[in-house]
Figure 1 (cartoon, rainbow, N blue to C red):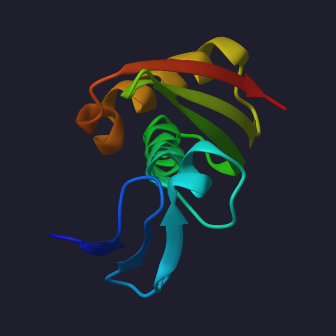
Figure 2: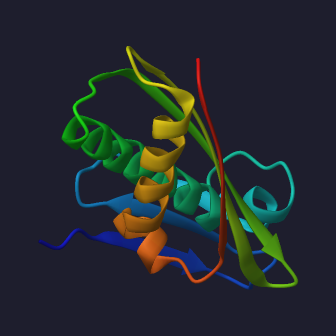
Length: 136
C-alpha cells in the first residue's frame, strides 16, 4: 500500500507560500507558509500534519491492541504535540484518554505502551516519543 501527498512551494523560505494536497482529497491545496509554521498564520504546517498522523495512527493501533486483549474501547482521544527545536523535530508527545469498560489502569498502561512502540508512525519517527495515558 502507498499513500501520497503533493506540496508546491513558490518563493523564498520566509516570504514564499505553499500548498499541500493529499491523494484522498481531504487536504486540497491547504495553505502553508513561514507564518503558519513559526507564527500564528492561517494554514497548516509540517509539524501539525505529523501530529495528526501520529495521533490518528496511535489511536487506531491502541484500538487493535485493546481488542486483541479482549476489550472494546468506547472512545480513544489522543492529542499529539510535535516539538521543533533548533531546526530538528525533537519530540512527539502523545496524550491519550480512553473510555474502556472493565479494564484496570495497569493493563491499560501496558496496552498503551505497546501501541506507542508498535504504531507504524512511531516506528517512522526518529525522535523522542513520550506517552501520558489514562482511563477516564
